[in-house]
Image (cartoon, rainbow, N blue to C red; front, side, top):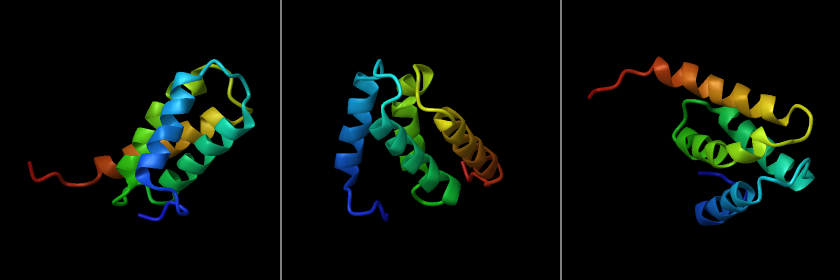
Length: 94
């Protein structure tokens, strides 16, 4: 999985920090992290790493409900909706 050199453990620590400090309004670093995660998910909403980006956005949801920068929450929602649409179309063997 290509994460621009960031390990999954590092990503989860970043997402957890944002979740724990969600009361920080309009934090440009947090906004950038959410937008990057949403972009990765939107680029391949049914891909092998879609679950990772979905988990990341879910972990950061408390920040998104507080006061993120303009348009940040909508980008996250749009990426999650794309993943939902794509994954609903996949056949599940079980």
